[in-house]
Length: 260
Ligand code: BTN
Image 1: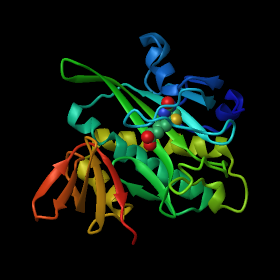
Image 2: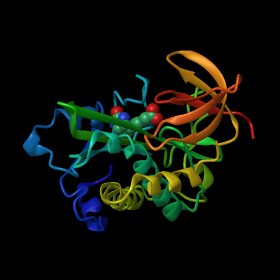
Image 3: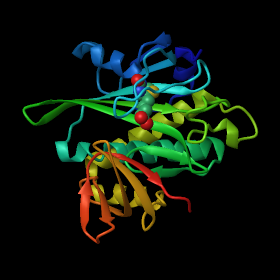
Image 4: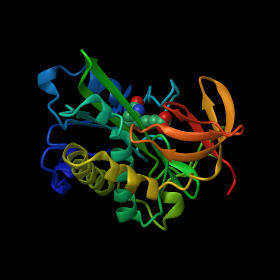
């Protein structure tokens, strides 16, 4: 199990992870984070688990992860910025995680809209962001991250789509080192999002995404569409060009990148 004292021994952040909850098994670290009372969850509170019995993915899916092998954690963020910047949090989180993974493992990580990370074109990590909004102001955001670290066997229905860092490294990856690296990068990216124009962040994210100019299949409100991925707009939407040449922005959906 990931122990609190191990994290405390390595973590070099200013705020993120200073308040920390570690679990052997829990339903979902995101759900636990949401259940915490205001005072029990200051900005930067971290919840880590070795196993989730009800891990949540995007679009009401499950997030399945073998016990003790991967990273499953949530961070409570008390955003000090407007709602339109919150839409860019997935990009900040994806970049932070990609950078930390590359530093720890040497694996080349690609970003896929909206917030997946791929290694060798298969999904290695996903993010689920849940926000509480009051009177158009985001009160807090729960950023949940799942990274497939040392798991080497995946269920039949996902084995063509999912991978882990271990499958691309010569040895087991140290989960605590990787977690601390992600948190340190996240803290920096969060500050970047607060202090600088968001375009800088988006430009960096785009450099890590190879989907632009390629044909994608988009699942949007349960309908399927083929299009070309053109860009990411300043508001975080995916700009696509449909087969009839019409361009439009997509705010939510699932993307499959055609064979390259
Ligand atoms: C996705 O790609 O669909 C998002 C996956 C997010 C999974 C993480 S694991 C830790 C946190 N707790 C959850 O229940 N979900 C997120």
